[in-house]
Amino acid sequence: MYTPERGAKFLLTKLTPLVLCLFPVCIQAQDSTEGYMGSLAPVMRSIQKENGFRLDYFHRKGLPLSEWRRQGRAEVLRALSYRPRTVPLDLKVHSTITRAGYQVRTISFAGSPHYRIPAYLLVPQKGKRPYPALVALHDHGGYFVHGKEKLVHTENEHPALTEFKQELYGGRSVADELAKRGFVVLVIDAFYWGERRLRYDHPPVDMQAALKGLRPEETRYVRALNNWLGLRRHDMNSSLFLVGATWLGIMNYDDRRSVDLLVSMPEVDPHRIGCVGLSIGGMRSTYLAGMDSRIKAAIITGWMTALPTTFDITHSVVAGLPDAPGLHARLDHPDVATLAAPECAIFVQNCGQDQLFTRAGMEEAAEKIRRVYQDLGHAERFQMKFYDVPHQFNVQMQEEAFEWLEKWVGGSAR
Image (cartoon, rainbow, N blue to C red; front, side):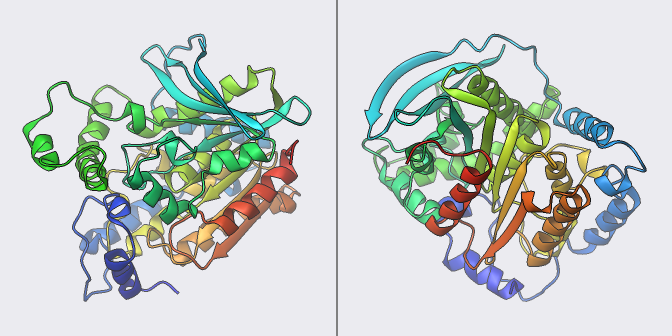
């Protein structure tokens, strides 16, 4: 059971520095059980109650499902505030290597008029084409130096990345595991990670100071750079507001653009596409499933809660994270997932020792989604399970997620 004391102890003793830098504050054990927002929390709760999530499924007042979904998605798009001009995909394959049963292609494609998206594309080499496909969505983790590599095996992997994968993924490269099971898997660098992270021709003084005396091949260097990038992400987030965009908006657009790429490929069955992600990857999975009807199965791991319950936590969990301003006056986070119902089969995996959310918040969110699927006559298309683990996507969780994906969009090779 979650308690503030257990939360403080876990954050201080169990999470690695790589994960700790997800939080831009100095987390300390607290004597009080008072929520992080203290005296401001009642004001925020009052605002939320007045707004009341009036666009959720159970407030639709007789609207046909298709019209409610149209209105809900329009509201999300408005809040995401990123709708660039569509450009040709312009796929480029930079290199290809062959592994046992599948290829790994290093690619890039046009995300928008403003940038290209670097990615790995894993394609099975056995079984019958066209294959089912997945968008595999990497986490946040306070680890920005690598993005797509968190999910894909690479030669000469940095020891900091190996340590990170061991902590969050049971030492596995999730995309490779899925390719072995017969899925085409696309993994991009999300905005601000990997090849798309913040860089300078002339590094600022504080960045130089943070990295002084450290070598890029050292784990200490990667940790120091991740910490520095973690602090600077607040400036990036605010700077996007100044140009009328949002971080989450760019992420979601790029994730939907990833589906565009998959459906353009002759190797892919466009009717069997899913998505999977841990943490912010789970958040991305929620928004991708909710906003793109081509997604037929989704794994949401370690990121599903009723947002108002985060006020009950005694440490910061939301500062500097991507979000959609104004959206939650009308839709809670689980409501975004319900926009996918009932065509998309959703499996929510909650971490019972997760210190990002309360257990009550996770249960409330899952129950809301479950009620929608039940009301639509498709209770079998939603599943939620608690695992007695911290914030992670371990081997057991992966295997059960893979079974769900194989059930609803189907693997073609073993």
